[in-house]
Length: 428
Image (cartoon, rainbow, N blue to C red; front, side, top):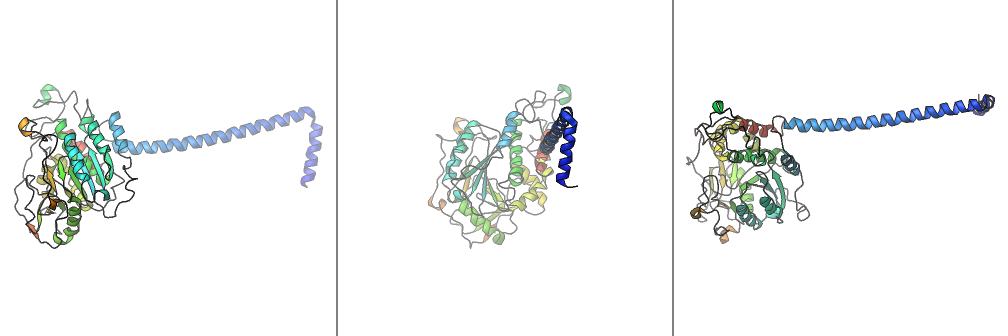
């Protein structure tokens, strides 16, 4: 039957049905159309909601999975962790960086008078515009934040330790109302905490130093999109390290020389391991290999991976100092001497007096008249490392070694567990 014949038949049928029949047909058609439309809307709506819900569940699972075992965060902790994902500032001023640039990480606490000096010294470093400066904060302090936000001489990215004890006023890792104090007996006082080897309970302000350094290392090497694939060296400095104008250029030379001059060296340093020394002097025409110092030290991802395998040694050693823990526990476990390569004259110097060991009395003030009296000679303004120098190795140096039992301050199991969580948070 043709289409025309079918249409004609339908037309004749429609006439015979009459007005009532037409009403029934039209109503039925409308009802069918409405049901069909509602079905489409419902299905689309369910599809959209289901997909969105699934994505939300997936993202929450990832976040909560990474948070398993961590202390419950407060609003400030969460907001700072979100801020850590912001891109570096000054990208408009420095749109590109050399492929072989050395990332600089400056870790700070709450000594703004020191930070101003360090930032000013960095602004005068030759080549500073070629790199990314990451400033890692132990907590949040407005004055420290403002100083860093004022940096315009290079790319700069701020990160904040979200589990710093300074962010938690009533719970671990800060001070909890149920915490044991000083030499309390936990059973008698019915308080919470494990004492260190000397019978002292944790002090949040003290343990924050080790927590911050370890969180920072894990985050910089494995957690930031700007550096998690960085294969080269990263330089680490602190808020009381004065950096000389030639530091970056000397650092670049040392990094290039290390594979040839000292292939067994793990790192390069801008300063001697003895923080009171400025080195042997410009008259000494040789490179120095010695134990790794804690002022202006730089190493690559290969070394970091080796350090990370020693997380338990780092996290369980009863000493609140990260550097002493490294010297007496981590480095000795490598199986061979851990040397660093440096020049004969320091390109960085430790000037701080207001730490945990020194007071802030009138005779031993932090900074005299708001400044530091560090002489910057002409030789400190240009690279002063010769590519042809030989290496002198310092053996049997004094300092912390394997067998040292620690200064304490790190006996609480909660600190041990949090430390281990930092080691695994980007690998679970």
